[in-house]
Length: 135
Image 1: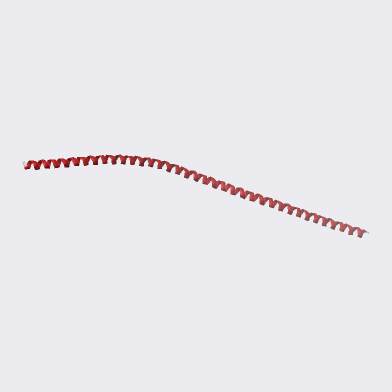
Image 2: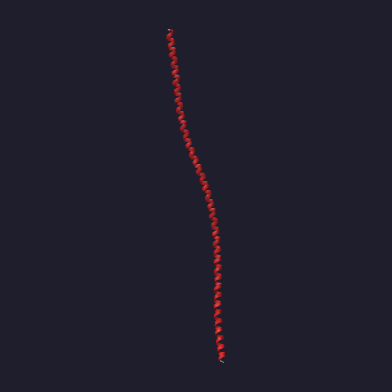
């Protein structure tokens, strides 16, 4: 009988331990399920963020390309502006040279007039001298 009581106690103790292990197993199973759900949610969040980042990266690359094109256009505009400035400078230089040419032409004409006048005076003097000698 004491052996039966000891066996009964052992069975009761083992039964309690089995129940405790089952509760622990159920608790761990619930934690595992929760962890799996959280993991799936994190995975979905990560995938969503990855998609958003990919979209943002695509937009960023498009913006970089657009900025490159704008930069090239700006360089072209700058070159055009530089050419306009150079053209204006050349135009101003042309006007200065034209004025200088006109001034030099006027001086040349004046000198030619002076030369012609001198020649006319020499001819007049020669004619006068000839007329004197004829007298």
